[in-house]
Each structure stands twice: as structure tokens, then as C-alpha cells.
Image (spheres, helix red, strand yellow):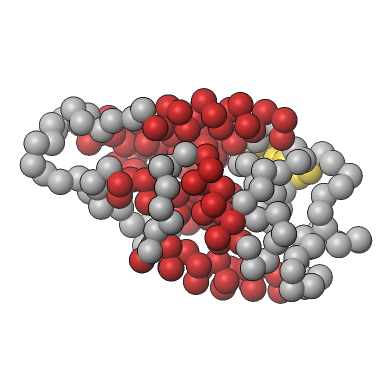
Length: 203
């Protein structure tokens, strides 16, 4: 939860960096541990029973709402403040809706047929980076994004599983992508996506 915030109304308990939550937890470490346990269970449920939807922005928000509704009143709602993290400034709050419209329209028009495995990884890495820069929620962006992309990639007919992935290495890849260096993120998707062999054009 180590976001830098340029708003005086940051949604935390007075004198703390602990987000106001439904459980009344006012210790950030305790909240982080509780949140991790609850969201892991919710994500496991979604892995077995994905939320139906057309992989648009509303679908994305419903996934976040499902994951975090037991903790926060604002689960699934677009943030109203500007945030940054580890030197990365995300899309400003007022620009989230128009940027999301353009991003998810592009995703809806996407087709993987005719792409080599590397080309597919490049396209997905670019989508992932673009959605990551939106960071539309006050908290829980990465976890909602991973669930969404897992379901979307599987909807393309590919096998994809993030559970064995080194989360720190993946985060570093997203930080490099935010700085314009996409190679590590592309490599990640190339290595973790498995496509049906029949009819696939290889490099």
C-alpha cells in the first residue's frame, strides 16, 4: 500500500496510512495480512468460476469489486485521487474514463490469429502495460489486473497460469515497461503463455 498521493483526502484513518475498511482495522500490517488472505481466497474462486463478461472496463471493475468488496466500500469504483508508486505516476483520476474507453475498445477488437508466439506476447505485454498505467482503483490494482488478464488470455484459447510466477520479478518488469523498456514484460508473457500447436505460425 506504499502509494504516493497528491491529495489531502486519502481515505485513511487519521494519523495513519491504513485505509478505512469495513473491518475497522487501523493497523496497516494487520490490514495487509487480512486483505491478502481474503483476496487470495476470492481469486481462487474466480479461477474456478470466472465472472461472465465481455472483457470491457465494466467487467474489469466487477472483478475488482468481487475481490475487495468484503474490505472496502469503494471496491470496483474508480479512484478520485492521483497516485504514484515507486517513481511511476499513473493516469490522473480525471483521465481514467476516457483512457479506459480507448484501451478496452482496442482490447475488444483484438485478434490473435496469424500472430507468432512472440508477436502475441508483444501485443499482450503492451495491453498489460497500458492497463497498468491506468491503475484505476485506490488499492488492489495489480491483483485485479492479474485475474482479468488470466481470464482474458484463456478466452483466447491459451493456457496461462500466474500462480508459480515470481511476483517481485514480474513487478520489476512492469516498472521497466513504465520507463519504456518492454523486453522483460514481453519475455514474461512469451514464457508463460501456452498456445494450441495446431495452426500456429512459429517464428
